Amino acid sequence: MISGRLGVIQRDQRGLTLVELLIAIMLAGAVTGGITMTIFQVFNMNSRTSNHMIAIRQVQHAGKQVSQDLLQAQDVVLGEGSGFLTLTWTDWDDAQHEIVYTLENMPSGEFMILWRSHSVNDEEPTVTLVAEYIDPDQTRCVQTDGAFTFTVTANVDGQSETREYEVMPRSGSQ
Image 1 (cartoon, rainbow, N blue to C red):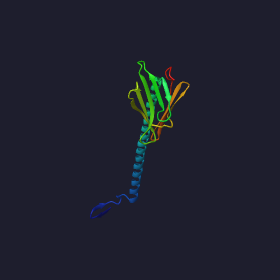
Image 2: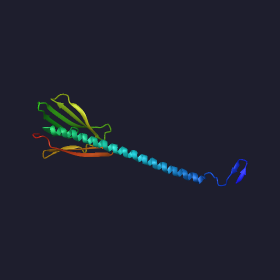
Image 3: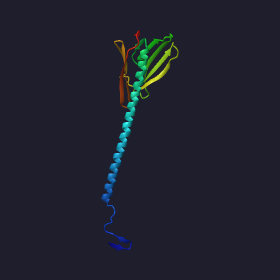
Image 4: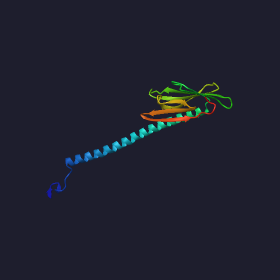
């Protein structure tokens, strides 16, 4: 023991050395970096999952709507370009229905919006948005052996979903 003016100091009592302090800072930095990377990966994965779910919902909604209309149709005209599908039929009460599906560029310009225009007895059509983020190169409707196959692809920030719907229209349709 050493005694001095300020009191008794024992030789075994020492503060942190510079090396110990640097090691403690490095360990804290490594732990903080690991936690930060884990949080970043969780948010990144959540964003990708969310985008994929949006793509799935868009494809499902488009498939459901087009399939329902194809089941009603008596006449089907497969077009090219933006108006790729026109459906017509006469209801039991002699109401004349016409549905035209069109693709229109989204503001981003990369993908398209699927629109549905439905008019009854040549009145002003009701236009509804069916699906967004539609890839026009992967979306088509073809007729084979009386059945229609509607293939639709949605792509949201690199997460895409493609579905194929096969519909056998009601008898008497062309």
